[in-house]
Length: 466
Ligand SMILES: *[C@@H]1O[C@H](CO)[C@@H](O)[C@H](O)[C@H]1NC(C)=O
Ligand SMILES: *[C@@H]1O[C@H](CO)[C@@H](O)[C@H](O)[C@H]1NC(C)=O
Ligand SMILES: *[C@@H]1O[C@H](CO)[C@@H](O)[C@H](O)[C@H]1NC(C)=O
Ligand SMILES: *[C@@H]1O[C@H](CO)[C@@H](O)[C@H](O)[C@H]1NC(C)=O
Ligand SMILES: *[C@@H]1O[C@H](CO)[C@@H](O)[C@H](O)[C@H]1NC(C)=O
Image (cartoon, rainbow, N blue to C red; front, top):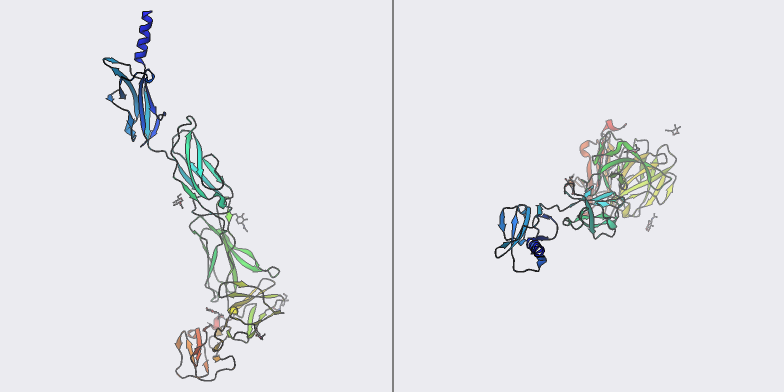
């Protein structure tokens, strides 16, 4: 009987228990750990406790306020009352490691995503071979499933939002990582439409033409597709034909060598896998003024400038039966309907909005030469009378100035590129043998009023047959 009591007493003495809070063993730098040493399940209060780390130091540990890696190690404790010591408790091993806060990444990581693109939001934990379950938190309208990877096959603005994730150990569900920083996914419901620029706008015969295709956020992984426009009179628009080697280029520019005729181009861009395509750009043109091309456009009366409400006829010439007249206005808009088309002639009663570049397109896909037409703004002011088509070197040309009511016969000043040509005012500016240096902008001035200025282009004799 006595022996039995002694055994119980001894057991009671030996029973020191170390616990920590939180009750797991992997901590991250900076976390707070509480140690608790108990005898007799906390019923005895007059024990003094000591905690031992790695069997060496005797320290009075009760908390670690901000864990560091050097706090890693085995901990045990024992109690002392008077001259009695309990045995050391079982050892608890604590691991303090650098933070394994996960990282959210977007693949691809373009700053703006468009509706319909494919994107993957990923939660990456660098936690060795630990297996994790994943949790997402997001303010997007569509929630991410609890997996490490959220693949959005066709994004929409409902996927926009901030995303953050954390991992939860598969083996020990109460052990989690911290939340990752949040990453913003922005899905735009706009369809991106690239903007094409064509340079130069007006061709010198045989020159190179450079196309540039610009998408917003140009660095973001686009490749480019290049097309020429093929007029299709049965539709309002045109159809597009891929240019040679134009099926996906890394560069956002494309060069056409030796272009001789008026032509239209469009581009579009694509990126990703599966590839997402933007809309086609609006068509842009390079214009040739060369009347010797298979198709040309003549203007009657034959001058660049016209008064408002003038009757002007635009006639398409060439061996084709079907035509449409196109117009590219100053504000960059393309029109294809002529209000009154009789055969191959379009009659217009001019208004200010008719200031534009005009050309013809045939039913079989030909572009004609192009002309500038300027409709005068100032109803009482003069217009410059200058040729619509380029003048050949060596030929003679005569510029004049006209009011709505009559041609002006005296007291006219002419300007070439804003420089007054002659001090001797007269009715006409006659150039008996035109040279390249006569090319440029001309305007006239009469009675304190100026006409608009118009370009007179001069072509070399050798260019005639191109
Ligand atoms: C996308 O990732 C690349 C490296 O993979 C990096 O250089 C670039 O800055 C990132 N872009 C954005 C918008 O995060
Ligand atoms: C353009 O390239 C894609 C593959 O990148 C191909 O599927 C397509 O048929 C090509 N189009 C033309 C007209 O060559
Ligand atoms: C039309 O005007 C532009 C300048 O506004 C000029 O560069 C171009 O050569 C002109 N075209 C013709 C056919 O005169
Ligand atoms: C042109 O239109 C204006 C009004 O828009 C009209 O007053 C004028 O008579 C028209 N001229 C011709 C030749 O049709
Ligand atoms: C016009 O086209 C027809 C058929 O395409 C051809 O037979 C004829 O020779 C052409 N005429 C001229 C002047 O080019």
